[in-house]
Image (tube, rainbow, N blue to C red; front, side):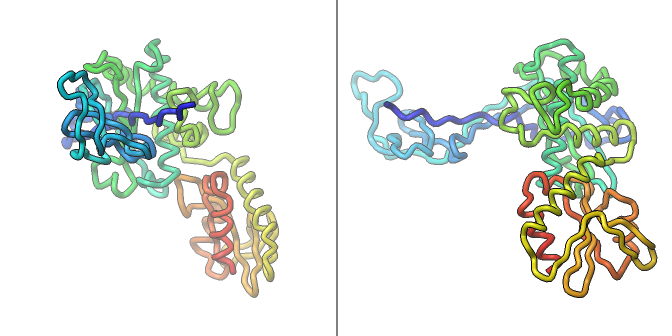
Length: 359
């Protein structure tokens, strides 16, 4: 039985061009969202199986994935086209690790979103990837339903804004484009609809028919985004979009906060740390603040530590106001904040960070 062929997939289209440098080139949607429509070049690439690229014979044009261990391109091989006079290519002129790519022009709607401290959309952070991937998928779904077109007619991708704010994690961009080369006018139509598309997106994220925890095939998931299912979180996306569209404070659901604290407490307790005593929802007096409830109170040696939870997009910013006061003004009892997303995605690492801090 022959081995299954190595599979590879093209990336989502990448937008290389920057947005307009002049503010007048942008159309404001809300205080934190602006957009710009244009026809732009988009780039699609394929890095091959295991992202090792392709091996290409510069003599005859034969190409195969570099990841194939028994590759034939580098040595003598049959030509990929009929040649009765000389059917075999002598090889020895192969290029390895080649990335395939093509570009096309289409209608593109560039959406710029802006946040302020304590929120951050810092490039490379898992929380940023989850939030922006979720918004990209949700806006596309909401737009296709509003326009009554097939879901595959539009696609979206995100990137850090090509501005100082983008580098600081205060600005990001989502670009929505027509998948048909040359464009079909759908992205332009979304721009004309304005705020209503984002309001539709909020409802889509908040009203999953199945009431799922993060995402499912009834709301955000589909076959085409199967590789990003782990990056879809409708609750995080909805709270960010409410902040951007309605100006509401970014608030993490209390149930998720409590669940994260429970999981962290149980995992820390299983470690059986010597000289460390843990209590859940314990009250403690903090000098200058008064009595507060610590989600997790750790007594290690001669010191107390308050362990709390912070939202994925608000690092080092407690979900509870009393904890924020204790962290900012209290000096005797340290306050350690752990990312809710880190607890749900990588609990051992989150526990290790706490253990290293208190022992």
